Length: 171
Image 1 (cartoon, rainbow, N blue to C red):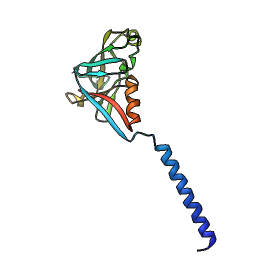
Image 2 (image 1 turned 120 degrees about the horizontal axis):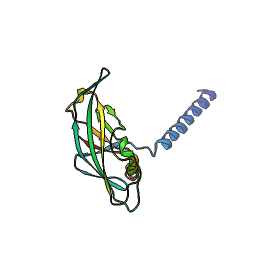
Image 3 (image 1 turned 180 degrees about the vertical axis):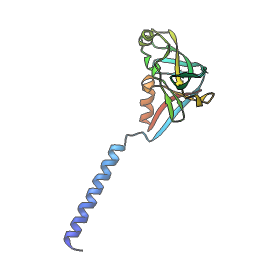
Image 4 (image 1 turned 45 degrees about the vertical axis):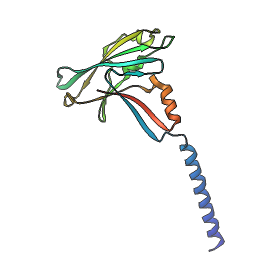
């Protein structure tokens, strides 16, 4: 081999080593597995400063508005502030209802927005969310996924163990 070929191969090899080291250092702290902790209706779920229970899940009558068919699904929850200060649990109204890869979000239901923004210590409140889903999901099992900002400490702790973490309720 000529000196030029040896020099060229050495530069390419050094570049590959530098590139490989860079990829390794960038990805070193990235979570490598996923864990969704599942609960059932009635189970107590620990959030950062609160405790949550999904207490009811029911399908309503099929609607037909302007040619669009939908099925209302009601999810009732109770949340209690377990800390000694006022907290905000308004992220609960951003909860996703999922059927496989299809998910739904809503802003409709029965809840007091001001109370969710400032829930007093040792008090609880009920939240009922109404989702409008495709009628094909009538009487099918679903999952309720909560915003990770509600249990940020658990998410960060699991992240340090190489896991992406989530909380869901099987309905």
